[in-house]
Structure formats: structure tokens, C-alpha cells
Length: 318
Image 1 (spheres, one colour):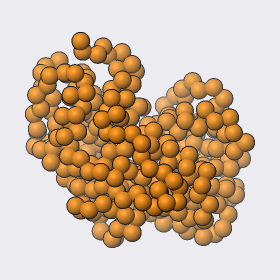
Image 2: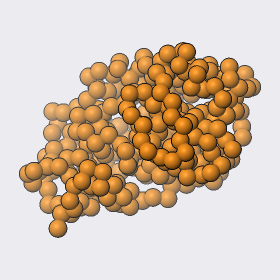
Image 3: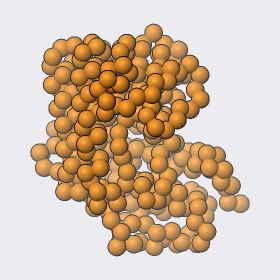
Image 4: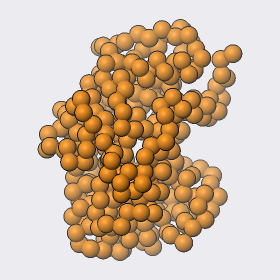
């Protein structure tokens, strides 16, 4: 039975990982949380730990054979533009301590999530080799944070005790995401606005011309499982995305249509937005892991709306 520690288990990606892996009887899951309380999934071992504290990290990691690191400080475009520093320090500290503890305890495999923000905008799909050393200015701190984690993973892999896999994913959406117009990313904020507006109008930050590569969270979970099953190199890095660009304005329109509501869109160009155009070439993940995305954007939107309405007790329009 594989002893897997999931860090950040009560967050968006972490909770989806826990629920997916807990269904496999060959896994023994320890779920780390900090402030947000645990949820009810049978068979999970819960551990509360502050991952910026070296002693608590050491205790959480002890005995783990696999670490899946999904703990992070995240928020939306407003903070990325106005307060980018809030994402940097704690994320750097917690990942540094986890890398060291994994090495000290001889953890067999460490999976860490990176992000497509490391790439510059381009009209062509970005492959893993397309990181140039330059990053889009609003993402400067966050992108270099991710590159630091990737390079630290490669460094520790070179010491020979722990195998490291980096999943450089695109924009993830689905159940358990943040649904807050001020703190969410574009998709979660739009779902919330569409489902809760009491008028016939919603506002979208910016002009909606920027593009995103949107991947439903179940497809990311498939990539995690494929990594556990097939990745055997000391260090490996994979793009994980839908591999298709779509304009924000088109995503918003798709969400409105799927909701069954008749809403007008107001584009608020005074609000902060990040005008990038990035989508991922995921051929390496297909070749090595046998992974390709399965969920269309339309199907993912429908599944997310169904989950959201159930989670927040919202009645579907008649």
C-alpha cells in the first residue's frame, strides 16, 4: 500500500486529489491541512501542519513514500496586479522546507505543480522547452517562484534519493475552486456572477480578448494518476493542459448559455486584467504518461455548474 501525503488537501486541487486517490484501496492517504477544516472522506488520515514551520513539516513528511504538493497561496488578477508579493514568500518557504524534508526522509516520489504562467504569450502552443528566461511582467514574481520550485526539484532529484515530477499545468477549473468575484480566477468568478446576479447583467474584467487554456480538474487528476503509475525518471517535467486557446469572452458566453439564463455582458476595462495568450503543447505527457485530456470545455462547464448549484443550493432556472 503506497503511503501518500497530499499537502494542501483542503484546497481546490488538493481536495480533488484526495477524493480521487481515496477511492483506490492500494493508497493510504495522509491529508495535510492548515486553517481550512477537514472534510469527510472515509479512510483518510488528517494532519494539521503549518508548512512554513520546519518542525511541523518534518513531522508531516515522516513516513510518506509519495508527496503530492498542492499547498499554495493563490488568488485572482486583482492581487496579482496590485499585491504580487503576497504569493511569493510563504510559497517559497513551504516548498523549500518540503523539498528538504522529502530528501531527509528518503521519500520515493515527489509531485509538484508548476504553471503555464512561466511562458510568454504566443500564437503557437508552448512546449516544455519554450521557457526563455523571460516572463510576462504581471507574473514576474509568481512565474519565477514556479521556476525556482522546478529547479529545486531538479536539484534534489540529482542527489539521488527522491524522484521528482513537475506538472506544469494550464488554467484549471471545476469543483472546489474559489467562487469569489474578488479572489477567484476568471472561470470561478464568472460562474459565481452568472449564478448569483439579481439583474440581467454581469461584468467581466477587461475586454475579454485575452485567451486561456482551460483544463477541467478531472483531467489533471488523470495526469496525477498517470504520473504515479508511469513516471520512473529521476526528474521529469510535463505540460498538462487542454492544448487549445479560447478567448475569455467566448468562455463567458459559453457559461451563460450553459446556465440557461438570459444575461447581458458588460466589459469593465477599468478593472485589472492580464492580457496573455498562452496554450500548451502536451505531446510529452501523451508519449511518456499516456495522458491526454478527455473533458471538453462544454462538458466541463456543464459539470461545474451542476456541482456549483448543488454545493451552494442554487435552483436551476426553469
